[in-house]
Length: 270
Image (cartoon, rainbow, N blue to C red; front, side):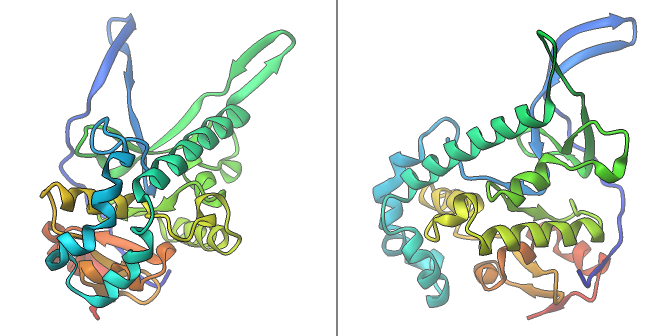
């Protein structure tokens, strides 16, 4: 990675958690949902509990019915094969496979058998710059607890290495430069070797599926996040994101664009 990035604290959002119990007067146990930071897997349900297959026909006709929102030929040419044949069904099928792969990976890394007993390793969590997302889920890197930090591997990275997730960093939630390099290598290699969902070259990535469905529902107008190529420092407009290889994409929402220009050194317009 060639960009030099500075970090500043940011006002945090409130999280959403369930009460489990408390062991003493100042130590509660709570249950909360964690969104693995910096990655994106295919959707099983979206929006809400709706099945992606319900949007098949509308997605297949999206570029005709919403041509104004996908105004450039390059973007339409890129999306057309990904929207051609039951894109919602493909999304949920790969989403379910990614869910099962994550479950198997977690059990493999966490479960330990001692005689007739089964024990589970503790988890190590690292919270991002922005602690919670819009759904009040904790944003974190999650790894099996490991005494030697050098041997610690997050599920975030492992899922990308196996092709069950793509990197999805949204400024200001940024990894350290060394971690960026690991992410780029993991996704690039998984793509080249067609691991996991990369086997299906016509699959919409999770964030692509969401902006397509949101456009159908009138919530968005196509891709709406600016995108930085972290290898060159060039800033692309939202409808140009596809020109950047997936592993090199850093997304920036419009509200954070001015701050990003100040903090990401070497950032320049395309």
